[in-house]
Amino acid sequence: MIEKHQYVRSKKLLKMVASLDCQVCGSGEMVQAAHTNWGGGKGRGIKADDNLVAALCLKCHYEIDQGKTLSKQERQDLWQKAHIRTILALQNDWPENVPLPTEIT
Image (cartoon, rainbow, N blue to C red; front, side):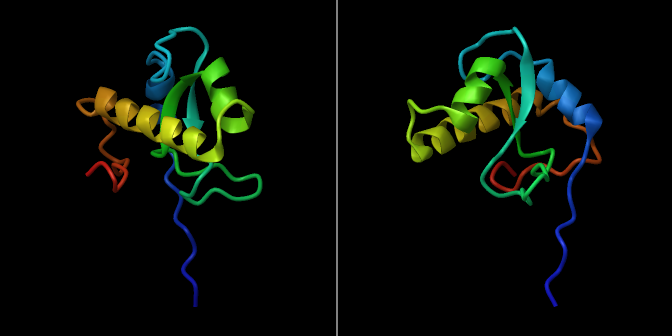
């Protein structure tokens, strides 16, 4: 039997991420907690785990999600770098009940 994915959800973490500057361009305007599009339990209409996020402004979020100027690999790489920067920026305040992503721990 296939085990069902146990999603990580944390409104507190998402608010903390959105309070950061964009981890791609440095903008402090309209920053969002942008979930990964590559894994983490993402499915049709289901966001990936909340610990798989990056602090991105609207422009960078759009470019990584739907942009046409970057290849898929470039978009994945850019999101991954922003994700790691986001985790490192919050490492001292990370909520206790939220597991760190495995690539960081």
